[in-house]
Image: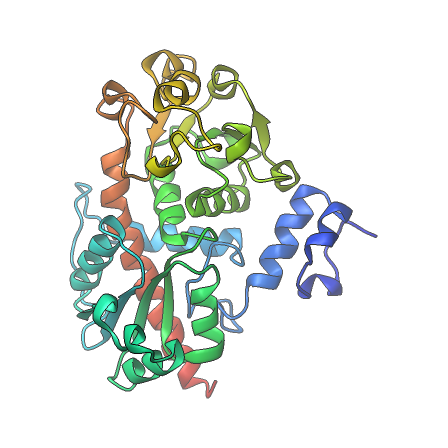
Length: 357
């Protein structure tokens, strides 16, 4: 079978097909099959379900849009692009950072913002998810920002339940966290001294259970990064991850040597002491982002982390608060990226409706 894209590339790729293609072709075919229903026919975004399905130009357009929300001094500005529209934040699992930054973004865009208390919603009383969403849609909602513990929940809503509401994925199961992925890309774009195509990036931590890692790896590949390294205990690595074009390292020192970016991931505390992970001190010894390991990277290397951080387990406090850390900039950039995604999705949804669907 040819490794080039052809008419069959528009069909979904089954797991058994992966071995037939090289990593780059796997990535392209998955993106092609996942591009719907996110996009209108002209390629504009009307839902934001994942970075998978978006090409390089589309990811760069999101970054460029986010840049318009900074002034000449790098400060965020307000712009009422969603004035008169209603955004409902539907968080079916706990979140502080993501939910707060979405709400800030929505208000900076001038939207009417409603935070739905899922813990007290009708879904807890036996109402189906479909009925709950249809009732919320009837309340003149324009955008749903959704976080759900089930992988694929946002895609289900966009295709099967409320296709005329712009759906923004705020994280679904272990599958994806696309706005986190894109805020990481914006941070690298703004802070790294070299373009994406010239970067070496190390991702360290619980990759197996991380929706952030999945979104980051996909976005980095699409933006042209060819040297993506991952490092974690074998119990925290997905099987066959090498097939997706990343280099797997068991030794942390080797992984970060001459890197441009070191990206840490959160280790769930509940896994400490489980069969998946040794003690916190053992993890820090072998995989912690320490000053000594940062010194092995390039002198201008960035240190990133999606938060919340476990200091002394995933990262040393001196590194997290150090000159090479861009962790707080990631939080600020997250507001700009979420403003961009909300604005672009609403614009695309309006165009979709005006075209008669």
